[in-house]
Every structure is written in C-alpha cells, then in structure tokens.
Image 1 (cartoon, rainbow, N blue to C red):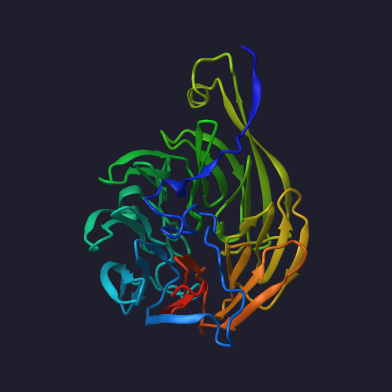
Image 2: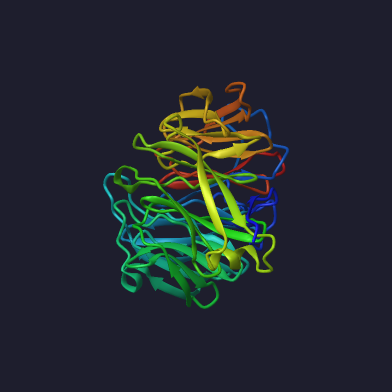
Length: 425
C-alpha cells in the first residue's frame, strides 16, 4: 500500500472545549481551552491609581491553586492550620457556599505550603488533587464527595519534591490524570462518573505540569509533560504515539505545553533548560479502510515528531506561556519576553514583574507580578506597550489570574480578590 504523509489538520481543538461551559467561563486550569486565553472582549484600557474596581476581597489561606469559575461560582483550594480545603464561593460577592476538607496541610519550606492543583469543573462534577495526592470527584453544587482515590496508596505514586501539582483533565467520559505510579501507571484514565480505572500507560516519574488534548484528522492525543519527557498517548487505550526526552533539574517540568496550530507544540522549563517547538506528522495509508487510530494501534501507521527549534531564550520555571498570532509571551525566569513561535527568536523583553504570571484576552496580556502588581499590555511583537498598571495585592503571588464574565480573580497566600476589568459590574 502506498504510504503518504498527512500533516495534522488546522481543525485541532484543545480538550477544554468538551467541558460543559461557556466562553465567558474559566472552568479549569488555564481556562476553557487550557491555553491561558479568554474569548472575552471589551477590557478597560485605562485604570485609576488603585487599579480596576475592586468588587470584593475575602481571606484565604496558603496555597497556589488556580481559580476556576463556572455558573456564577468560584472554586479553588487553600490550607488553613493543619487542614487543606476545596472551597466554593459566590462570584457576585465572594460569599462562601461550601468547603470540603481534602487533606492535611502540605508543608514545604522552600516552595511554600498548601495545595497546588486547580479544580476542574465539568457540569455538576468537580475534580482535583490534593498536595499529598488524593484525587477527588465532588458534587460541584454542594461539595459532597462522589468518589476518591489515594494516588500514593493505590498506584504507588511517589510524592514529588514540591507536592502533587497536576490538574485533572476531562475528555468526554474520561478523567485523565498524571499519576506517576509504579510500572506502566504514569498516566491513568478514570471513568469520570464512577472513578473506575479505564486504562493506565507510560512509565515515568511525576513532573508538575498538567495535560492537554488535541484532536487532528480523527486522531486525538493527550499531551503530558511528565518528569523527564513530553509524551503523547491515545485517550482510547493509552497507546503511546510518541515521546520526546526532556530532562530538567529536579524534574521541574511545570509549565503546561502550548499547542501551536496546525501541527506544533511548545514546551519550556526553567533551571537553565530552555524551550523547544516540535512538529507532529501522521503517517498513514489512504488505501487502507481502517481509521488512522486503528492503523497506528496495529503498527501500520505512525505519528512522528521533529524538532523545529530548541534554545534557552525562554525558560518557564512554573508560569505557562500564551500564544497570540504566532508569537509566544511568557516568563524567562523573571524576565517577561516575546518570542516568535516558528523560530524561537526573541522579539522583546522587559523586567519588573519578578517570577510573574500571564494570561491573554482581547489582544492584550494581563500580567500579575509575584508581588501583586497587575498590568495590561498589548500583545504585539513590536515591543512591550503597557496600557495600565497598579498594585492590587501584597505578599507572594504565584497563581495566574482568572478571567470570567468581566471579572478578574487574583490571589496571594492570604486572600482572593475579584476585580471588574470590563466596567460591567
């Protein structure tokens, strides 16, 4: 049979689109599509001296969990005293709706105490992982437990040096989790409703990243940035499509991979490792009646990758980058940079945000410094063009902002704040 090369289609979709959410929500880690990008428009381009209008601020304990927003509710995690909690707040006024004790408080003197994972909201279910490795499915309405697994006890997962940090991924009826278990149990797929194990795959230690999913020409891939590799697996049965070695100091592969349509993926790590862009190609036969997935599974088809570029001009230690019009914006340690996605060439850089975080909306970067300075800047490769900035929090801020329904949510290790960035509230 004649073999041909089929490049991955432009129609690739990130897995977040299957969640029961609207474009104005932020129901999981990095938003609806797990790319740090919001579809919201109409951001205020000018602020007063104190920043956007503060809608509310409430006390919150230690931790670095992101903030998820769905159906008028805000979900995150924190630690208080000896306990770790999952909490649900009212998006309008910050009032507490419920809280669930998820584990003992995780203490880590160097990286900071408290939980790291971000809750994933899928309809009436919430999924998350405690810093000690307890996987939970809760009723999002009332916080009651639906099912749970202790990843260390059930799968032999080894506690990462700085705690369990991965955020679960929903893909149809599956819940995909980077477990880091013994044997071929690095990645595990659960039935999201029952918690039953559907399959397990890959052999590697845990990193600190969270998985994404892309679908191209009928071939869906779950992309996981594990402790020492970037790996692609089939959501159907865990078949490994391809692997790319990526060894980082202390196994800190933490930033989430970024999909670059139609056929590339960007990864980056700190500790002087750097970044790379990989291009994927699917080799199948069009003379074969079987699907591409069937051909690949039966070794009659293949997915191959090639390294487009690799350099040390962008080193995401923990803050993930965002993509806009084929340019990547992110933190090279403590320097905010713009690089071209096709070449990795630096376009501009600026300081003043420390080890901050960044998301994208309405053609603009929303940047939060590690000490609470919030800034709005044009997402352009021409240069850093700031529109507005103000200090909105104090203390350590390592959690990326969340944007949903015109409200921007930011947090430190003591409180969470909600800001009106569109003038709608």
